[in-house]
Length: 103
Image (cartoon, rainbow, N blue to C red; front, side, top):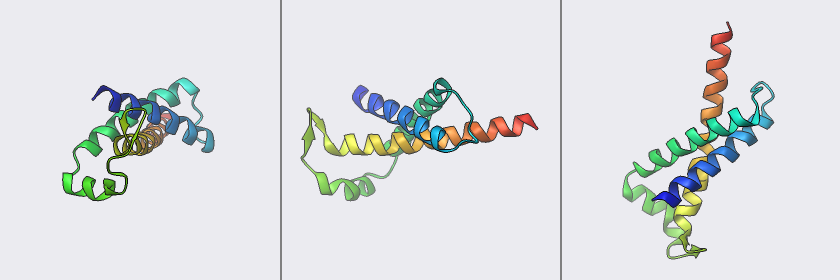
């Protein structure tokens, strides 16, 4: 449980920083990008956890039974993907809100 949140949070921070560096209109410091990424990554992990089990089982059947450092590979890959995407989306949302407030 805690491992999943940590994976989502770290992946979100990385995703937020990558997107923030790639999109120059999102002129935010690394702390802001990291915070937005952690929030988005955590939310992305929660959303992934709410998906129907049949859908998740179909997506994760490729790596069934594999583990890395004692962590299930399905959880690891899913956490990295959902955290990174969630972090990127949260940073875009932050940039949009900041732009709208500046008007």
